[in-house]
Length: 323
Image 1: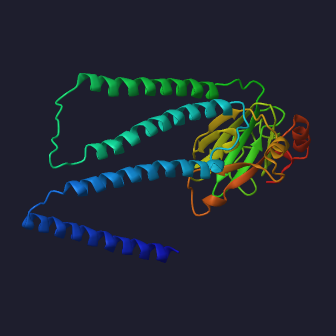
Image 2: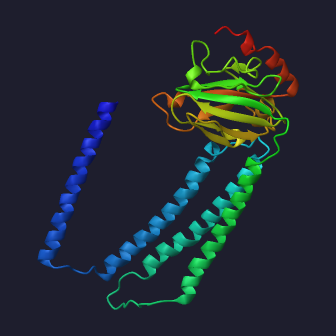
Image 3: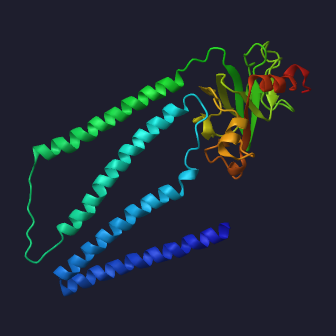
């Protein structure tokens, strides 16, 4: 595969050089023979082709949106997800409205004011009215979106986390491991320098908060209970992405990042709603982190408090582990 890509790059490079040489040849011949203005017929044909391209371009945008709608963000399953989705919808609505307004005008003007033998361009040196319109209107719209975005971000990042479940999400090439705070709901200290043998997270077992921590390879979350996810990385920067919960946070070597949210739809409820009995929430790495990046994912199970507590009781505490 690598050899094929190298070959393809070389071929494309040769083609690009050939095209550049051809452009220089054409420009030289134009200088020698003198430049000939296109006729009205040629300008009209080019204008009509421009209009045809505009129609094809806009219809293509609509087609791609409809065709790939299902692979956009899935249904929200967290308490803050609706706020994120509303911000997204407002932003995209304004962008699409401006796109549908400006693009037809751009192509239509290119056709309407095409070159004509008897035509003469009108030059405007300055227009205060136009300057005010295309400065103030975008500034007001963008200010509104920015303020709304800041408000939404503040609401999402500063939510109520009282009584929240604390879970560490530990990333390494190319795997995810999870550590639940035990009955004290406080994670014990951990550092990469303490990684040894089976202690792959580098947990300090001398820390009084470490003994009841629980390390698993599965991520279970209770429905309708706040969760604080604390992220660490062993090697390179990864990005923990849980699309259904509208959560994404970089995991950075040498520091702890975190994100708090509340799952609102259990896995079973989402299976019923989607009509897919095999549906699973998923945790992905959303930053290219190496050759097996594509394989760095874990299923996430959202369940009732009762089922979650039953699952937790089946797990072994770190104090019972053999390092």
